[in-house]
Length: 205
Image 1 (tube, rainbow, N blue to C red):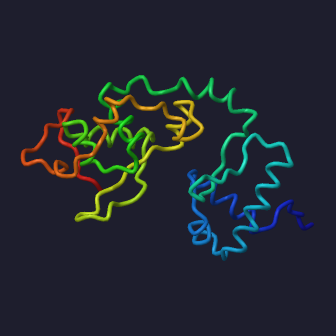
Image 2: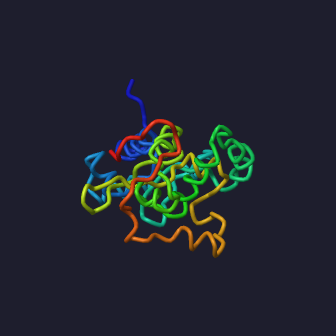
């Protein structure tokens, strides 16, 4: 006997893509991955949003300010989730790793060379560590020679630091703001900086 679906095939396909990718996707990317045109994709997203709102799910479809879409906790559950996820920051992160993570959070998108310039030491291994633990991710490539990776924070970062979005980061002090300012002329110093770790790190992918 044929199964009756509560959602259209298009909406179910968009749901699968958002679930599998596990990150915010722009409409153009959703269209590419599903084969839907823009009109059909928007219709599927609207349907998906209605299903999640009307059926009492713990997650909802969220449209971000940049026009991307992702699944997120329902607002009424957020405080309970904050107490659970907001205390799970990996205690094995060193002070240097936390410093690097804060630089990425406030300056994203940012290249590894720009991180090095702000910290004054090479950050290859720390950036790799933060990627392995899924606190940061590659969000693009900078349009300069070599096209280095641009890094940004992940959904895991938001959850484990108890933030709804990057806009909820505490305001930097004037001293930190000055320190985090990029000096374009010193992004490529004449003498190499030393890495924090014993082993040299890899170049940006």
